[in-house]
Length: 236
Image (cartoon, rainbow, N blue to C red; front, side, top):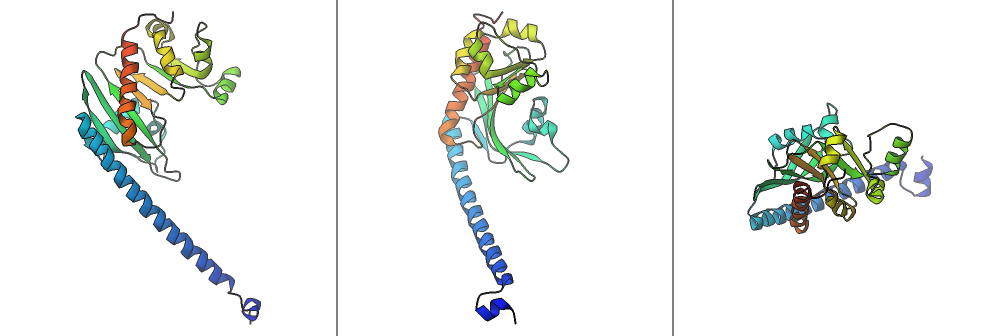
């Protein structure tokens, strides 16, 4: 006879079954709550899109996802077992600018997700560039001569210290970049934006879109676009 049975306590296999059952129940409850939250969020996004006169698609667009490959986007580095898809896509024209704001989800072990905004404008003729917060590891990489080449502006040390700026054509970028956009970046310390072929891709500081911030994200993207379109004072 087992010692646990002699002492009157449940055998180890029973404890294992109890643990598995509790874990399963909690997982199911979490999935139900997340699904309910997502439905409420999707409804809110649909309503804000209608209010702004924009289109809404809960399943997103594969064509748009393919267009993101030209940027330094996770799909360019995906492994064969990984997949990405767009959800909660809000898009449409705001004047002469075409806006797409959406969630991107990733399959696989980590199942990461993030929110993005793509701004397209035929009037945006500028060199390719990327501006993002500069981390301690970035600074360390530069110190030993690896990683992205960081374009610094001696007249604006705070901006250069807080942001990593890179471009395939540094000379053209310095002539193009309007330093009046620098206060905008300093007031948005988590801003990450990349420019390619008449488009700006913003990596938003959020795992997923929420209806209360959609208008704010779009207004900020248009504000930066307008600053870049009117270079009153270049960085040269």
